Image (cartoon, rainbow, N blue to C red; front, side):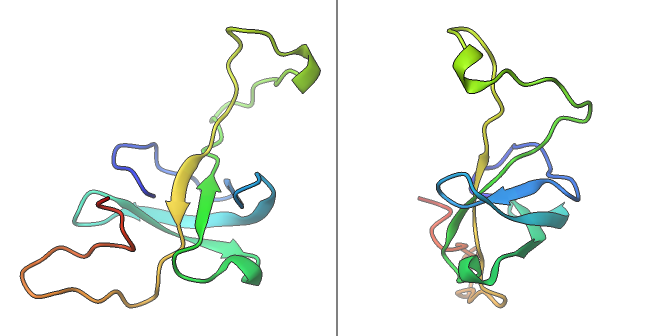
Amino acid sequence: MREKGVRVPKTGDPVTDRRGQVIGYITSCSLDGEGYLLGLAYVDKRYNRPGTRIGIFNLPRRPRSEKAREDLSPGDRVLLHDQAVVLGRFPIKKRGQPVDWLGLEE
């Protein structure tokens, strides 16, 4: 995840591309030593390059009914994705510095 303090995704939560198209699903997630969430997901191979920006929808525990787009009005609540990025398998850590997962500290 690109931000600290977001809700932990659950197994089965959808992963999306920049346009909101589902490209995969979360399989696991945990907190790293720097306070970021790191997870695994099955993702379409077109989106598996390190640095690819993706979205993760943390679905609510209890399903709620969503309004159709044409029925939305000001003040309605909608589900938004959290920003994430595809990471390389083995990050390079400079001695004495925390790992910067592809610009997460920007």
